[in-house]
Image 1 (spheres, rainbow, N blue to C red):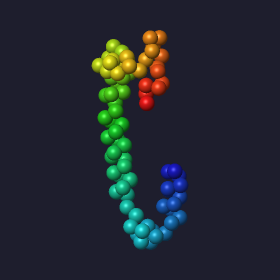
Image 2 (image 1 turned 120 degrees about the vertical axis):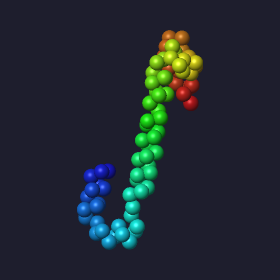
Image 3 (image 1 turned 90 degrees about the vertical axis):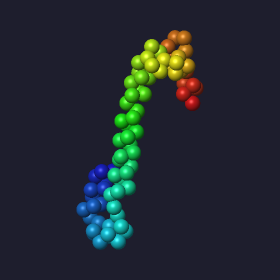
Length: 76
């Protein structure tokens, strides 16, 4: 997609982008949102990775069977 975007920027006349009022602000906003999501998910993922002995052990105990395997239906 990046290659297609670059090709489009090269071959499309700038007047077309100006007439369509193309701006980069929507892309920047989406990038900010995804960055925030990925940053805030680091701590919960680390807590879940700690397993049943970690701070979210009560959640993990509800997702695994006695053998330690995941119960897939409980993820929904």
